[in-house]
Length: 117
Length: 117
Image (cartoon, rainbow over all chains, first blue to last red; front, side, top):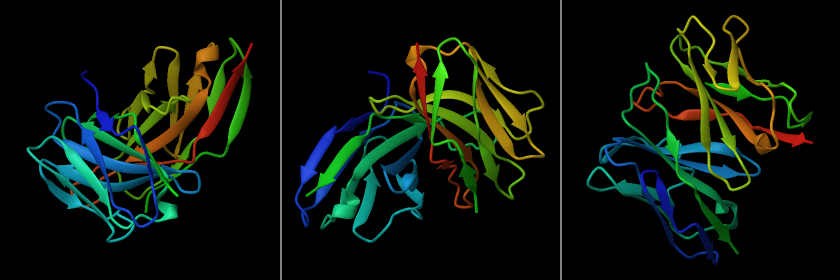
């Protein structure tokens, strides 16, 4: 398809385990964003990629969270030693560029629902 | 710091009536963009409408229009002739430059709209 895809759609894990969440942005989109949506905190920015580099990691909640992007395309968000408070929907979005002075919509994927038991 | 406030956690509207969803924002940046997204129960974030801070006219997209009052820092979404399929969560979001080259979105808490026949 032409949209942003994410996998898995649902992930249930045990506290303390590591998880990897994958995002495939729209082909040609250079900017990629990860957000987290939880009941208590709403939608929060996590990290931004321009190409393969991440100039803004300010939203990552702890050093258990990391992300990488390869080939200017696929991105993986890794959560180590998961905690129950990590339970949330993790959303990925991509946009054509990172330009902020024009209409430059972020297209969202369907999200990965993470449940930590 | 940027902030988006949506004061209506939930709303009920009669089908075919017009509905206004409130959004106020706070930023010291002179250049910013305002977005409205719809999130149905399926979880996908669907872009509805965009308003740039320097745009002179209010944005319109089909049944959606944005009542942009810059001096009041408000960007209310108006949905004309509401339909049952409009029932969803609606998020107001603001895009500004984080200073690290990122134009991530800051979201409000959302308004749950329920359209009844």
